[in-house]
Length: 414
Length: 207
Image (cartoon, rainbow over all chains, first blue to last red; front, side, top):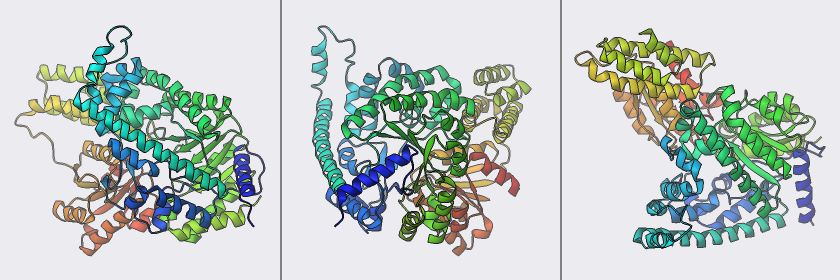
């Protein structure tokens, strides 16, 4: 009889040892699953994402069939659409909500903060969030834009604030928040239940928190990529001030979530540092300092930063590897040259990736085995490597996914 | 006019706008001012290719060009506002994919390089793209997609262009961060671009 507790401990040790650059028995395989189980098992996207029971079953089935080294959870984006529906979340589109009923979710990026609103954000980010961002990104919270500021109302002015809450539109936004609260409690309860089932089946979770680089918050959510990129020259002081302002909040977010989850690994997807977006000097001035400070502060709390380095960042990687706290970080390489990165990363950083989406989606199992062989021969050398996809498994051909798992397990032994 | 070209090339936005206002007020030839902008834009493209400039400068240059043109256009009067274009380009984000930013930046850069660009938007049906190729007769159709789900719709466009007998009349360019040689072959397109200047260079090479 298989002892799932022992399996859990064995997998967790292999994963944590790999991250810490310690010797392990073999290369762990931990793919970013995304919506693969929904397609692979023939479920309908819209139905699956609106029924946590279906999601849980599909995900557990995927684990049993493919036996990854670490578990995957649908409770990241796919499991939260119920809450997003109630509030009419505008930064995502998903099946049945702006997209066909069989489509995977897609992000929407826009200029949410105008240049002249930097000062508002910088002087009072919570007020900016509550009275500007929430009304912009949640359709049903639009009335919150009518609220008066509460900052400064320390004395006798609160009745004016309570009176503002009597506005029928604001009352409706309040009802939306109450509904979202109920839905969130229900969803998080189901999430805890799934994570328990996953652990009992022998799989630990890959990370326990998420945060972002301060400049990515500006580029992804506030100014949009175009706004952020022109601000590098038009208003560099404001941009830097915004990053400084965001830094402690991005850190608190990560530490708070690790305390809840108990898993000392924090996921940090990097979006706006690609080679051709900005110069190296700009990267070193605007992007890297606050991200590095965030990483160092996490490491001081014994939390491993797990960076998903999207796009091509070949010119950034030497600096990112040079400055990394040794034996604590995972760099997941998307389309950068992972083979070159390995030459610098030995004894410093655990690398993860990067079987290309193009091969997984349109190539043959032989193509996949060929790429995995190269990763094992050149990147797994000396440890500190996790086999993964470059992007995710969403559109991967099942026979290619099988080839990736089988090859890694057969040939990944140290 | 050299000052205009230099201000554009060096990203001196305030100086460029002030010079433009000054020259227009002094009654200088608006067409010559516009040509100086264009020369500045060419220099920006060169610096991008040399690795001195990045997407951030391309976007800023595009905004400066638009702001400058808006000032100059009322002065052009009878003169033709724009010279003959270097050719037509059709761009679209393929069916199923709603991402627009990369495609729109690429479109702007091709326009600034002197091409006439028709942008069909996002999540555009395959049949619609093929129909537009037939009617608009572009020299190049640019298919954009950020996600892996774009691979098959891109292939469908090329297949349908072939079936409609249009494949020989138009070059097909793919754009998107998950596009590589594998996908180029899979789709049967002519070229792929991971940055905005590759498009322009490829277009210029067709002339």
